[in-house]
Amino acid sequence: MPLVKIELFPGRSPEKKAELAREITATLERVAGIKPEATTVMFAEVKPEDWFVAGEALGSPAKN
Image 1 (tube, rainbow, N blue to C red):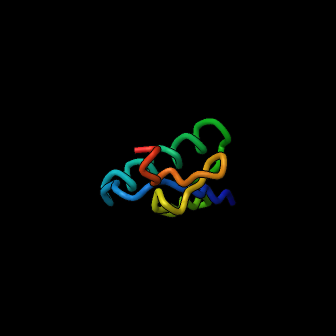
Image 2 (image 1 turned 120 degrees about the vertical axis):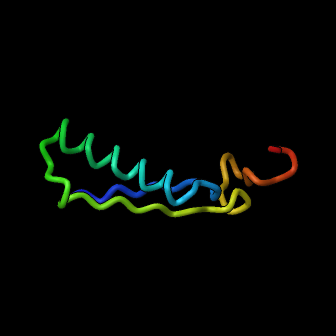
């Protein structure tokens, strides 16, 4: 039972997230033979100021 967790910045519509979840589920079925009902896709939205790379927030003025 795969759990696919996607962390991303806010801003995608519920429709886009649903489309992405369907595509991921279909890919796991096609490539790995996993039944769709066994796949869970979870989205976690993270604000850019809470996401750090090399010690700097992606939401900092220097990154925008």
